[in-house]
Length: 223
Image 1 (cartoon, rainbow, N blue to C red):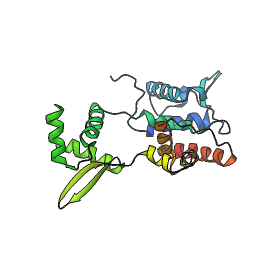
Image 2: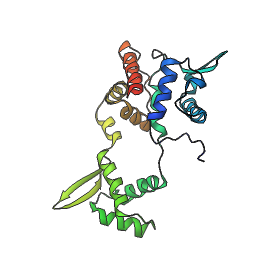
Image 3: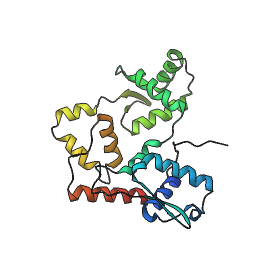
Image 4: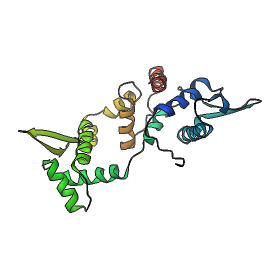
C-alpha cells in the first residue's frame, strides 16, 4: 500500500477538498463520505502543509471542522498557488531536464536522434527516442526549447530568451508582473516567475489587486 506523499499527480480530488474547506468550513470528517477516511486524512495533511497559517479548526459535539480562512485584504498573493508547486515528477523528468539543457546549452541545433545518441553515449543513460521526443515537445510548448523544421526533420535548440534580460531592459516590468500575477490569465505563470527571480508582491494594496486575488481564489476552486 502506497504511503502518504505531499506530491500529487492530479488536482481534481485535492481541489474538491480545498473547495470544501474554503467555501463551507463547517464539515467534519464524517461529512466527507465520498472518499475513505484515509483519503480525507491524506488530503487534509496536504492542504495543511501548503496553507498551514490559513487553517482554522473548530470543535463541536459532531467533531472537528476544518476551514481555510483567507482575508484577501491582508495577503500579497493567492496562497492556493502553493498547491501547483506540489506536482509530482519522476526520476526521468529530473534527469532529462538537466541533461537536455546541458546538451543544448552550446546553442547548436540538433535532431532528436542526435540528442538521444548524446544522452546515451556521453551520460551513460539509456533513453528511448519516444521518451526524449515527449520531453522535447513539452519544453517546446513551454518555450524553453525551440523546434525548427528543415525539410522533414525537426532541429532543437535552447531558447535564447531569459527573464533576467527582460527585467534589465524594460523598466517597471517587475511591477507589472507583480500586479498581473494575481489576474486570471497570468496568475500561476507570473507567480512562478516571481519566485524564480526572488521577487515578492508587496507594492499593491489597492482594492483592484484585492479583487483580483479574490477572483483568482474562486477561479482555482471552480476549475
